[in-house]
Amino acid sequence: MLKSSFGNEFIEAGCDEAGRGCLAGPVAAAAVILPKKFKHKFLNDSKQLSARQREELQGEIKEAALSWAVAEVSHQVIDEINILKASIRGMHEALDKLEIRPQLILADGNRFYAYQNIPHHCIVKGDGKYLSIAAASVLAKTHRDELMRKLALEFPGYKWEKNAGYPTKEHREAIRNLGVTPYHRKTFRLLPEQLKLGL
Image (cartoon, rainbow, N blue to C red; front, top):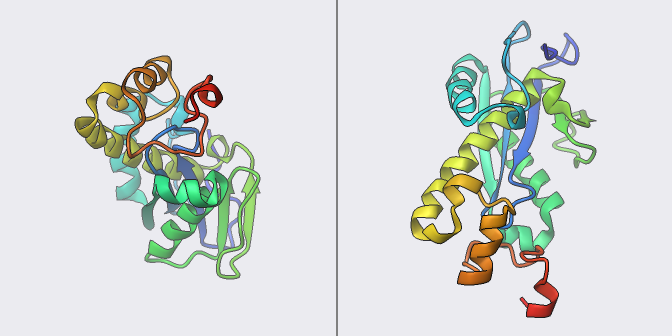
């Protein structure tokens, strides 16, 4: 079972993102403040859960959280500033939206930029260690998956409703056959032979 909190003295916000490795669409980020004594048997890193489990947990998290927020950073901004900076910007924007100001930030991963002089800890694989980060991973993932399903209606050939923009074989095959959409990240290696194609 994941830990309820890093400590007992501070209001903690867990932060995580979804879509960092995708070829198309925005990166989504979430920030979640859970009650100190919050427990959950099944809440875990969103990648360890099924789509159905994530959808069910999404409602439970929003109901239980003292405050939660989701933000997204567009593919255009990702291309401008790079995916790491865009991911951290998304976390900052999610923190901006919280109705409660946290006193400590738990950020998934090994990089984070200081936010409003609030202390933070970077926790590698934190979404599998702390409930607040796991909750943020679920909210970011479900938000982004829903967005990619909507974009899939506009560009159905890429199967974004299934692959969410990740570099699956079918997604890359669609890029090869149909070309690049306005939602693809131009600075990413969209195809293995990309350099030859001059994309």
